[in-house]
Amino acid sequence: MSSKNCLSLHSRVFVALHFPRFLPPFYYVLPCLSLCLLLPKLSLPPYSWNSLSENTCSGSSLTIFKNLPLPSSLTPYPQRLLLLFLFCRLVPKNQCECVQESKLDVYQLKDSIDKNDLASITVRREKEFQHYLRRHPSMNKEVVIAQPNLPLSYPVHGVQVMSLHTVMIPGKPCSYEHQQPSAPRTAVTLRASLGTLSTLAEVSDDIVHGRVDMGKSLMGNALIPFFITLSISNRKIRDLVTVTTKTFFRYHKLRALIKSIRQYYSDVKIIVADDNEHPEKIDDENVEQYIMPFAKGWFAGRNLAISQVTTKYYLWVDDDFLFTEDTKIEKMVDVLERSDLDIVGGTVKKNQYRFKIIYEQGEDGGCMHLRYGSYRLLEGFPNCEVASGVVNFFLAHTDESRRVSFDPKLQRVAHSEFFMDGMHSLRVGSCSGFSVDHQSRDRPSDSQLAEAEKNYWKFRPNTQQQIRFKLALHYFKNRLKCYTKR
Image (cartoon, rainbow, N blue to C red; front, side, top):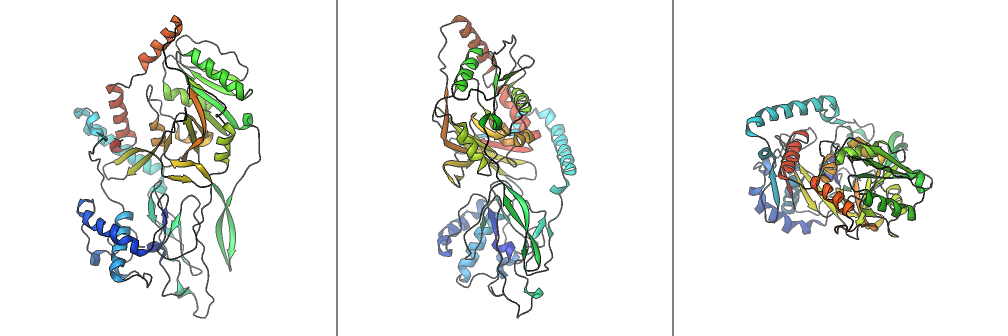
């Protein structure tokens, strides 16, 4: 590697969590030309190439874009197009908006708050946000660059990337002023523990590992950290997984669920959170039933159930599901054991529900967009995809879920809110290889069961009052300005 072709790390290497590897430069001409036409519609300042200097972005690692050393195979014009594309994609914007489109539900969260209270709530929200930053000082610390004692400098602290987004890595991989001209050339290997490294140069294939621990290795006389993948020994399902659920009014459906579980997993522990007005005891030696105040709520019940789990994983199911021969907990465990996921969802009646959450940062609040679908396939599992959220049938790491928790303010209709709260900390996947069935929703012929169903559905509708409450909660707690879903 010569100094002429040495690529500066901050301008060449990017953590691309869901974008494919860069194509040869000529593939970018048309997209970049299209991007140039769209620039007036983007919330970006009208920079000229001569003004793209260190003052463009915060941080001393950004040099003048027009002077960056690119591979000699790129002519000046494609160079500029390609850099324009990367600049527009990677440099953060100060504002975001939720624009109305066809078949898109758009919520401006300020509209859900009483106008007389909006100003005071906004002030209190900013105060709480600043308090959060003080309690998490790492959010404010500047990037720390390791000074090279070998021909490599790299960040040791302060680089942040949002989940499933991209960031430029500061530093210089080739500092030849610290190396004698006659010194042997040194190979540098870049590894990403949870993302993917992409470059503008021709380099070897990306190397991606799963959940990892830290180890050390020697590079010449220098001590370099590296990552070690962890594994655990095989154990029985009852030692690894607890089934959790919440029930309300519908004991007949809960008993049918438990009966189906026992058909395939006779000794797995089941935890039931119960906020019925008149509780009925469930007779099963491996069922733990926790009684709550009447109508305490959906997410409060989830929190209670998960708080009592003592196994590494818990399997969440609704009380009206049914286990079948396709409900393979072993397969779900295998996915979590051999990947970096925190949560893996299955299918309900063979229907796979998963969604993406896209977040944009703004000075006066963020913009969150929920879209059905997934980001990409999960490496090593052809029937699994990486997503942001999944259906109510999922296996999860107990400790990771507890760190996020389920907001007990959400009492009746809630699901995606848990994944929104865990967007920056939970890694989620969805697989089509395991499924549960759903019990019939037909009106029971038995009058007592029909009355129980009637009472249940009195609490179930997602009223406009509940929607406004959730949107106001997102505005304050999640510091959002708007929210869209399709």
